Image 1 (spheres, rainbow, N blue to C red):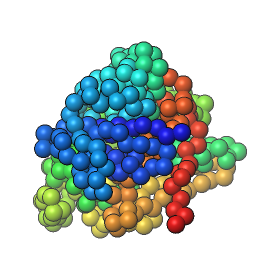
Image 2 (image 1 turned 60 degrees about the horizontal axis):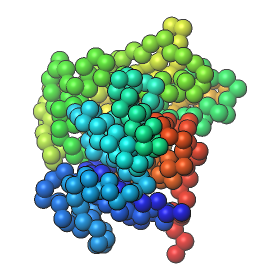
Image 3 (image 1 turned 90 degrees about the horizontal axis):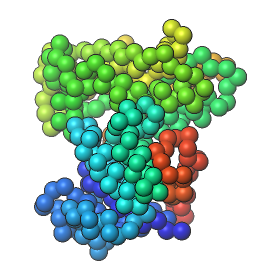
Image 4 (image 1 turned 135 degrees about the horizontal axis):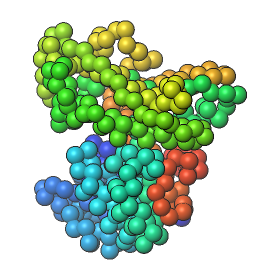
Amino acid sequence: MTYRVIQWSTGNVGHHAARLIARHPDLELVGLWVHSPDKVGRDVGELIGIEPLGITATDDVDALLALGADCVSYTATADLRPTEAIDDMARILASGANVVSSSVVPLLYPPHVDPMMRAPLEDACTSGGTSCFTSGIDPGWANDLLPLVLTGNCEYIDSVRMMEIVNYNTYAQPEVLFGTMGFGQPLDATPLLLVPGVLSFAWGGVVRGIAAALGAELDELVEVHERLPAPADIDLGFGVVEAGTTAALRFEVQGIVNGTVRVVLEHVTRLDDDLAPDWPQPAGHSGYRVIVSGNPNYTVDLQMMGDDGDHNTAGLVGTAARIVNAIPAVCAARPGLLSVTDLPLVPGRGLLRTD
């Protein structure tokens, strides 16, 4: 069966998702929504850097939904507009199209999200008979699917730690890096990411989801963080981090059970490989690490690199691939908001090159 798919946005994740849909043997790209007026009317292939596809980009939502697609890949940025993103997805779901999304990342584990925030999506799934699955790489498969696979091969488990250890010096999203995350800001500044509750909102669903899958109920989530300054100016090419301002960030979202830290989501983020040498180091240039303490003890390091030689490209493609490749499973799933435990294993069916 071929599933007809609309791609929603062509940002850092979206343009990869559109390419993956166009080239997937079980999917057909039938439409593309764009925000920028200068992209409207242009061939989708041109916008995403591949051959012309004979499909034109549009900002006409009604026209797109009238196509009767099986699924919409929704990757529009939601960091500063979660309510608008939820409204978009609810409209899509109510129209009869399923949704896979890398936006509004707390929905990765729906019970973590406030019921008032979930309600429009749940109502839309009911009225449209549709399903909605949110994922990516982090939050996403590097800290839900991968650790759950490991925990299924234990006698007992003392704790689970999911780590991202990444150099963000090629992450060319200044508004996120400098604004949301606070790089280049004074060490005593409070960027959005470090406002109390934001870390738990964004990554607490991962921690709660792992605990729930292991049959444990958390007492609370605890946030901790540490920052270090740049010893000298760091020119990233899309902005300069001045000496003395934030250039390394480490944070944890800890899941507590009976007073003990049992499940941890940790990020170790640098803008230069030489910063914070005593903090955890990646196995390669950048990547993810899962540590399951118990019997046996497992440590798995995931290194990643895009075909352009950039580890950040790999993260973006890995995010897009998780949701795009899940489309057939999501279309076949029960109506409602889905998490990783609601889907079967999603292999790269049809993606092995044989020519």
